[in-house]
Image (cartoon, rainbow, N blue to C red; front, side, top):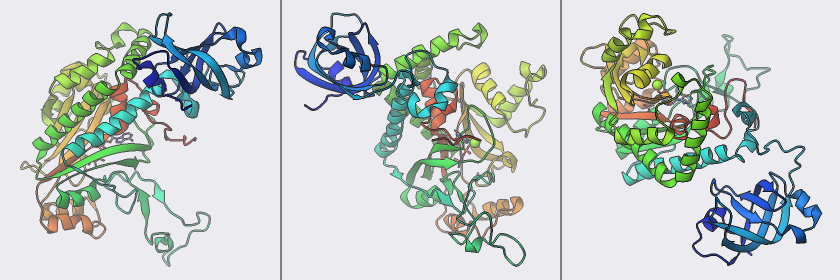
Length: 477
Ligand code: 4AD
Ligand code: MG
């Protein structure tokens, strides 16, 4: 008999038919009631064992984490908490889970402990919910862009270009590290390396994405990106997934509209598809917040926060206005910020972004027109000669979730900028071709997928929303 997914059994309109379910035991109560889960839903199905006719050796093996197969009638449940249950007639242990050794016992585990067991934590309710939500969110990303006629582009993972000019890249090489080939001048001879040049893992698919936008009009990427920045924070990963749309003929306002519409769509879609998981995560967060002092608890619960983002326009504020607000803010005057804002031109730290979003505006904020010298070389210079058409979207509890810009489409201005900051024109000659041939206004942005998952799940550490996090000193699994 083929097994039926527990999600389908729980939604089944008819009872009494013989069914088979396979899954992992969550709990086994009174030698009679199994809570069985197969990952198709956060909800378990109750399986009632005929303990008088089941041998003791079998009953003993029904332990948390064991894989089992149960066959029986699907009947209306007399117990509270579930509509239907399985009255087991046949039970088979598929794989034991020794209770002395299986780490995921039905009790509260710390998130730190679960991180160390990332291969097993997905068997808990919380991580099952997070990973289903993550999956639905990624489908929503494709669904949004595909409906709008964007072309999905797979940009390279190994690259010779440093898109963000940040220099925080992981090198890719097949050279023997213990005996590196040297040039006559004594430098490492990358001509002997696999690609005949120095290569890295990509930090962004944008530059390649732009070349495609200048032919296909509207494109998006959705792939892994890598940053070797040594920031051990709850918002940074060394390997994360980024979504980068790029659109020909869009200016910065169009870019903001697209980003806002896109974010609202994927959140709405996920709320429609994952009501049980999001309800569970909302309750989880409420429980967690109870352990915090009143002042640190959020005013809205998770579902309310998600609704709020759908129902309210993001506030659009220029960098210059933001600096004025920050300079006059109480934490700045009382020197409560780690980095006190004194003058125009200062780079905004996460503490400033969060003040703006959480304390001042109390809604998602799009900051735009940043000083040129704190942003990447490819952003379009404004008429004032000192700001660029950049935009960052800041979210409550997260800080920056999106970074993007209108691109510098003027060949001469772009080359001049590259010269001043020392980017080799020859290295990026292919990129400059987009400006040499048929250049046009265009814009795009990058959304950090895990930061989006953080927001939607209400989790607070980015390591808890990616299956196997990579961070400084940590590449287990
Ligand atoms: O602001 P970033 O660096 O922008 C770019 O890479 C542009 N090329 C995007 C574009 O215009 N096409 O990164 C974009 C987003 C950030 O806003 C943040 O959400 C996320 O990527 N991000 C990270 N997420 C997790 N861990 C990290 N170390 C991240 N660095 C950036
Ligand atoms: Mg950024």
